[in-house]
Length: 130
Image: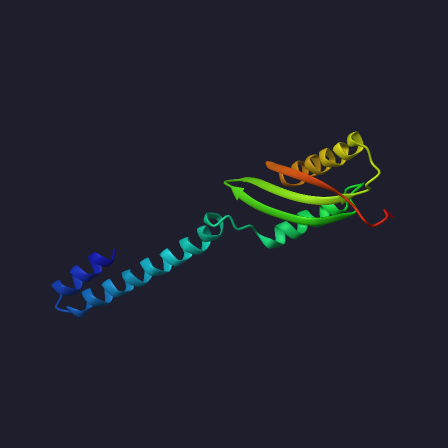
């Protein structure tokens, strides 16, 4: 379209129209490049939406048996979320009870966010459970 405008401008005697059309096309290309970069930069650097991570953290904190979320990291690959979370639990729980908490977290994450791979690390809490 820009080339057509430039050629028509030259044919009707307005040679600067070619320069103006080229300039406008250049601006459109630069704008498009910046928008594509903004959309992909976070994913390419293993970044993750901080609002979504906060929402996930709040849901994990509400899982029965979780005393505190110590750390949580996320990344995505396509439409799949990969979440690493460290939680504290009652130090007097046995392995089966602790494992149930990890399964509850994993199942909740899948139910709320779809394709989600969650790795849960358990630590004993130094605080007494409520």
